[in-house]
Amino acid sequence: MIASAAAFAFACFAIAVLMNLWKVVTAPLVADRILALDTMFINAIALMVLYGLALGSEIFFEAAMIIAMLGFVSTVAYARFILRGNIIE
Amino acid sequence: MASLFEFLVAAFLVIGGIFGIVGSFGLIKLNDPMSRLHAPTKATTLGVGGVLLASMLHAAAFEDYFSVHELLITLFLFLTAPITANFIAKVHIHRQESRDTMPPAGEDDHWATHDTPQDEEQRNANRTGAAQ
Image 1 (tube, each protein chain N blue to C red):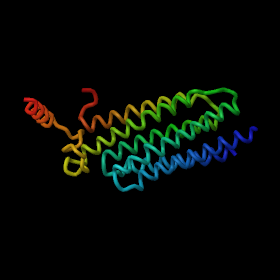
Image 2 (cartoon, rainbow over the protein chains, first blue to last red):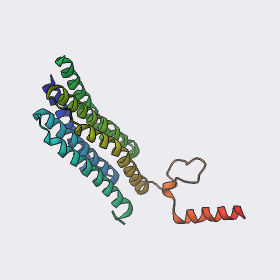
Image 3 (cartoon, each protein chain N blue to C red):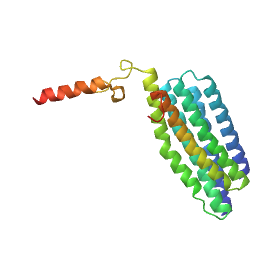
Image 4 (cartoon, chains in turn blue, yellow):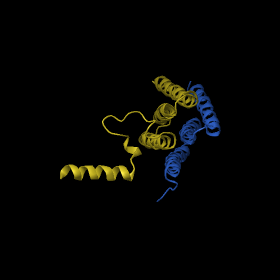
C-alpha cells in the first residue's frame, strides 16, 4: 500500500518538475521564470524526501535541508538582482 | 494497528502528490501573473508538507526512530514561502506595472512600493507647511 502510494507521489512530483522546467524555458516574464525555478526547488525537496522514504535512509534529509536553504537564498538573490541590479549593496 | 499507520502514510503521500501536481499545473494554467504566484507558493508548499508528514510518520511507526529533520524542513519551507512570494510580487510590480496601471490604493495617492525620494520630500514639505 505504501509502495504504490509512494509510486503515485513520485509520478506526480516528476510531472510537476517537468511542467516547471517547461515554464522556466518558455515563460515570457522574468518574474514567472524566477517563480518556476523556486517551485522546481520545492518539488526537488519533495522528490528527495520520497527517495529517502523509499530507501529507508536518513542521509537524504540533510540534502533536502541544504536544497531548501539554497533555494530560498537563490530566489531572493535573483529577485534582488532584477530589482536593484546588485545583490549586496 | 500497523495497518492504520500504513493507511495514514499512504493517504498523506497521495494527498501530497495531488497538491504538488495541482500547484505546478496552476503555474501553467493561470492567466494573470499575479494569480500565477498563488498556485506554487501555496499548493506546492502544502504538497511538500504532506510528503514530509508521511515520511515522519513512516519513520516513527515502522523504523522506530523519531526524526526531527522533516519538522525542520517543513518549518523552514512554511516560513520562507511567503517571503519568496513577496519578493517575486515586487519584481512583477516594478517590472510590469506603473503607478497608473495599479489598482486604486484607497485614501493614499499610490502604493508605497512605488514611492520615490521626490514623494517623500513632498510629504515632508506638506507636513512642515501644515505645522506652521
